[in-house]
Image (tube, rainbow, N blue to C red; front, side):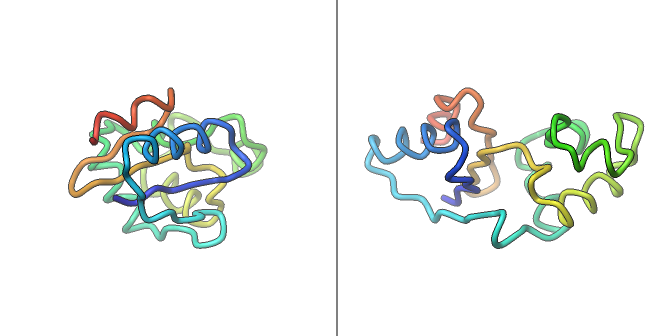
Length: 113
């Protein structure tokens, strides 16, 4: 199980604590330090079952507006933006095999247990 974690995010910390309470110690990836590449992001979008890359993006981040991104932006451009600016990736993301969830609310991580 891989956990894309931002330790400054309370939801990310809560989701990680929930997994640990279940006796699960995921492979924690500090994704801001070790950003996923476009292929990894594409795989996660598929594992999440999202219809569009836009559903994985944090629209409240300044980089979203600065890059001129919108719901009309192509998936390829959104994925490239997330790879270049990992802060744009919604967090936390938990990946287990071919399935993944976004831990919002944090209890959603239990769907993979």
